Image (cartoon, rainbow, N blue to C red; front, side, top):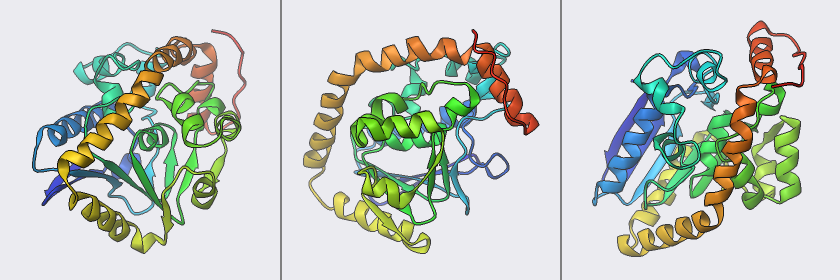
Length: 271
């Protein structure tokens, strides 16, 4: 089971669970996520959602290099329904953007509980959550630039709004590692707690929110998301217009090859 989806009272828990792939996001799990968010939005008994990793040492390794990335970089054509699905809707017109929480799909608070490595697409997905808690061992990285790829999952748009523009550019341009305490200090995280306390702290926060008036909390979230999208809709579209040709460039293919071959990439600097 790649995605653990369960409901406990008024709280839905959505757990990434791909041990062999370190929770890398492939087309199938993205479709599962999309279906889970739709279910949560439509279930009137659910008041809060919690996104977490079921693996002990990692939150998410980002987009799957064996399935999603070859299709997105145009190294090969889509071969099945899920792969055809992921190449549409990155600008907010389809399900992948919703699966990644890039655009609104669920008018209820989404809390991300993050531990271990939270990379690229996984990092972008938690940017779309409403509240974020992380353990002290959490490490965040937007490594796309090191692969010759421009982020197109909302990172260019979300990060400058969660942290300052100059800090966002540092994260995006360096492709470096940033620890939880740094991102808490920069305003990205609500709390940083010991690893063993992460889920307890997250569920305590979820329970507190779930105990409040559901119409009030949903109204707050709806307005927050609508205000965000009023400003961001065109920005998301432009991010994809600029970024997706880079996904299909010679640079991106060389970056992914080098990653697989465990060597330093030699970027040609051309499409």
